[in-house]
Length: 466
Image 1 (spheres, helix red, strand yellow):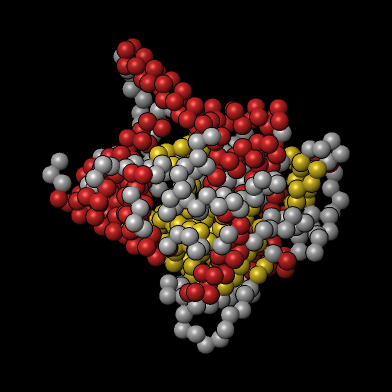
Image 2: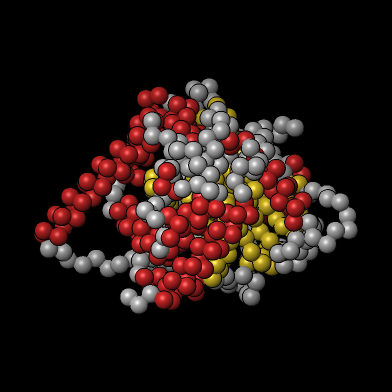
């Protein structure tokens, strides 16, 4: 059913950002699933009131649809929201002890179902059935054109409270920026030359990968046309942040280096488990980066200020990273993948390729239009094997409308790839979530390989004498 539009003046209609147009085009339709697992059975009675009084006021886009004005400019137009049309409560067969398969199949279905363009681009699914890990599951589906993961998760976090003390704000891990130190002239010169070379190499490689440089077919890349419309299985691994910090402290680098190494080694083991030699395939990951100049989430008021340090919207870039291989694949040193990941990440940080790519896409949009640019981004995704993105979750337990959240994760869906990986931290745990093409990727084997990867790296770290 189409929503009924309210009468708003034209100056209340804001233009859709270029990235918003790319993600909601004939070539791409990308959404984010945010999954919250409840410790207690879900009571859906406060849903409408919570959405109306807490969620909708966060941003006008949650009450708007995309339209083109008389000049052909795509804008957000505010509409009257019928909340009942956005709330979904599925029914499953009664009297089962656990509903894991039904819940997984349901989430898989909503992952590839398209959001209606005739109403605001979000919906909520309240699954009131227990699984082995939760008493109920709450799923938000939000179109990526509404904002990036930082904006959308920040919006959802503004709807929740701390379970231990609702009057206090949630806190998030943040890293302290290193204090700038004076460097010698030659040191600055060499670093500048290195950045220039890295930028030239990374930007050139990005252009090539987006046009001609397809990854090889492998156990992680089917190469099928329309893979973004195929069902996916969402599987998770959970690791202790304390263990990850022990690895980091022993080997050096950052938490990102460690978890990237765990993922790379897990993928290596998965290919071996599928009877595939990792050295025979070119496997590239497209890493999504937050380009905001902030180290932690901002409050809703900070995000919506006219001169906010980090405003609402899509503020991210992407870079290509080759999944490392080694000569003796079956006897690979687990710690090699941590070292390789650290080297890759350090090199990418010392490069301006992400920002050049953003300028290139903007130039393409101005010259050839948003639809052509969206097709270019689609090709960039399709030519690589997977996407990896991460978000920081709160340190304390969350509570949503009286429901303590035991665990949560997110997944990017609608991407033309067989595998999508997301990473999120919450309450001292770090969860690696994989959206795997159903019928092509063996989700159980992949999950097992990630577990083995982490265990072997942790054990090798304890034995490492350096």
